[in-house]
Image 1 (cartoon, chains in turn brown, blue):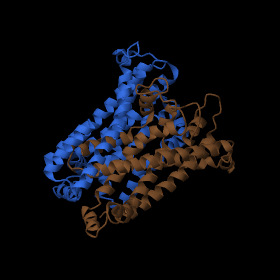
Image 2: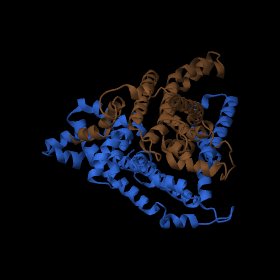
Image 3: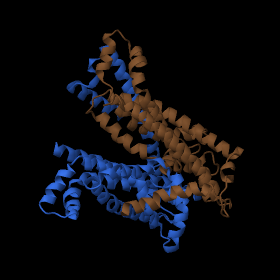
Image 4: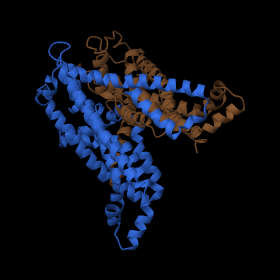
Length: 261
Length: 287
């Protein structure tokens, strides 16, 4: 079937090439030196940078997105505001990349901001984390809203009939119910931030703070530092991380789906 | 704007009875306060950067004045690299990618649904896999493949090979939703017992019934191609997003950068608005 041939060549083959080349010398033959070459202070700082940025942006995105999702869910199910926020979240969750960085540059750029001049705009990780939150919050709304919608009002009533306060309800009923869905969504956000490349390059292309930027540098470099095998090794590292995150996401989603039916 | 629309939602809510109506009045008031605050803060957070970008694109030669100059430059900006060819390439890519994606995915999905159901899990896995493998990883593996492609054809239009893969998850989910909403098996059995060939079943029975899903898949694909940067940039092709990036790096022409960015966004937003609007109308028409 043409479909299998197509995905084979342009999806499975590239992934295979990345992993294969991560264990090869430029001259041919197998080696672990590309992988062990990752164990330098420069590369470690990249992984630490990626971790910081993903942790901050996904934690902020998950908490704020969950609050917004709750605000949306607690309103009229056919209301205008709900429609606007759901449609808007669908659009904005995909809106990343170059134009997003430019929008923030126009709004709060250190010399050009229309709203104010943020001197911390180019600080890592806080400046870029703010930009990431812009697409993390809508993604959280998209992923988390179905879980909140599935919470039944009767459970709250039952909790109140038994004398429970709002705090008791969230501590013993709502919180534990939503925890797996929340954690799963947070993992998805983490993976999402990990994969983002265009936004951070448009934000700052001179200094590599995170792994995707260094992969980019290893592929095209104006000073002749092109090193394909390093790119392959870094990319393999990212595949490993993303696979772990996504497995966690699917397991937690399955756990969360138990009471949603 | 957010406050106004949440107000109208509230009016609608009291009329129809919203979900948490069983709460006590005090709780209800606190909840509503919380909702208004959230909607206002997030409305501002989402809208202000976009408005700032549009405002910046209308900046005159003196700070604080208004001018259309940057928008007029959209067609005349000569670069380097010039803007217009990048726009053309991106639009052409959007068309080619959409067509190839439909031709590749729609018959496969219908075929698997009707004849080889055991394969559907593999199909789903393959189609959703690009969500898991980031573009930045995929492009590393695509580089050697594109080395071979470039020996035959160096045009940036060749990017469509990779873009079809990127669009797969979105197209698949849109099409799967459409296919699930019709009774494909009964339709095909009816057609077959009336003597239709499999090709007739596919293109004249099932596909026309998935019109809305196909439109959704198309619009999502176009939106994706309009915003793609990573793969084009790292394979050193120039599409719209790469063009915007190089304007921001090579020139001090801030105006045209922001007008082109705003125009791209407006175009994509309009596309997605069409999607939700038509979707709702068709939905209403059926129910």
